[in-house]
Image (cartoon, rainbow, N blue to C red; front, side, top):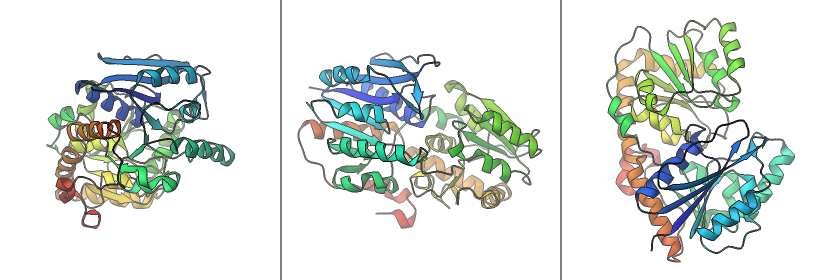
Length: 389
């Protein structure tokens, strides 16, 4: 019998952020594989509801947001209902509200948790409380999934290594593959950034790096930092070369990325542990310039293979990497070709979804899990030499 999967995350809607994009891809894939899928999430008070695809039963609880986390007094009861109707519960973390509510549940079946990021931007006292709740929660979890080898060693998981497994995120990338692969030489090279406009994304560092570069920058996304970033753009004299394009509809996103020549992810914080937007850009054939954060970002797009990696919060190093790719067209195109190959091999939903389904089946059958495993051997040739098994 195919189990019912209960998916739990703070929000629903792939346009809300990278975690939500992962959740959406997994939910749709599981539904297509014949699973019954139920989703429990919150949504900010002022935000409109996001529709659930056919075949997926979803519930969004409208909630106030405190310290970037939704708070809803009825969440515990809603989680108990979901748990009673599901054979496997799969939590996407960090989500302290769900973690605390789960501590009060009677555990009836396997629990899975995907660790997307550690909480790093809150006050120290709040982080201590959240980490204590997370540790208690993870002691009840049967399997902990992470998206890259580096992220499996984050401090939160030190106690739980025997239950950690590396499973890269998978996405339906066909529409990105369809538009990518051929780069036209524009009047000015175009850089693209895609994501929420929040401080940890490092867009202020990118703007400082652009002052002496002959490029345009297309910023795709919205967020609370937009006004400050527009002011900084004006102060740096970049208004003529920086375009704030706002939220891009899903249908238009592949073409927007394909219109660029280089993708930039200048994140400054370990809150960035994967970088979903990198994968979408790679699938269109864009080389990536990212930052070394000791998480998974520079594993998704490795230095020298699919782009270049620089230290975070270093405008000079970021500018030098961008200049190299701008001036060396052969390198830029070669990195872009390898980026498409890597995206197709490692981050397609077909294989990653099958692995997730196999993990659920293994848990449901009561089989014990082994220690963390590497990326499937058939894909090892795509890793840099230092990372090959």
